[in-house]
Image 1 (cartoon, rainbow, N blue to C red):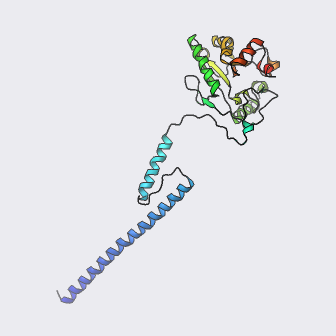
Image 2 (cartoon, rainbow, N blue to C red):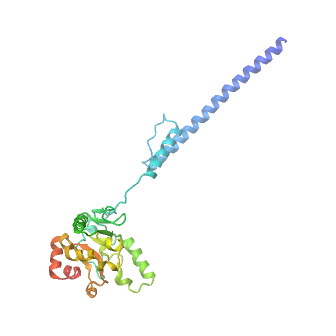
Image 3 (tube, rainbow, N blue to C red):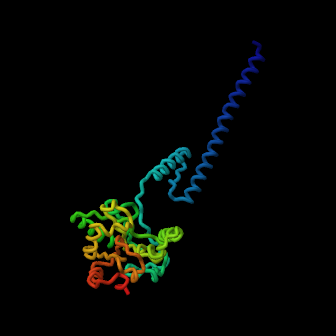
Length: 279
């Protein structure tokens, strides 16, 4: 092989080596630019959402994104218990205690957004579903009541308790729109419901397979037990049979309101309805 041919081959190899290293350098440069861009994007997301993990610029973007996916997955798979509503206070006076308000057909809450401060959720043993909430003192009294009832052989649970204005509005509108003739005396208007006070509970029992707001409840031994004993725990039936002209509502043997033991005893002894007593 001639000297010139060897020289051309060596020069060609040298050029190829240079091209190879230039190519590697260019690829790494592009990768670094993309990494910086991804870190910047994740940093911007972090500013908008503090829940995103902090950024360490020494960590590769792929690892950051993988960590985010794991965190997101954990959040999605996490079982979160149903929480009771919490008042969003704009004015302290708007959320003053309404537990003794003589709420009814003609008297509504001064603030339709009203939510009592200390709502607590009943557990599965004392309610028929999740999300049944009462204010703390009413909840504790209710639990004592149903525990004592159980000792006497009666199984009582709550099927409904606190309702927001929005929930009551849906229930009321559905009843009216369905053409129910007695809708206006079967359901309170939104903002006019005892349930929104957080002190009222609809009860049910094993005798009627824990049916909610059932007209058959008044025939059960649990209903008889409550009529005799509920006042000892601060609860009074709001809409007793034969008092429709006074309360403005149809009889609801399942509907009990907590007013405190002292006042409940006064009402029981007087023979008055809650409506009459609170006037």
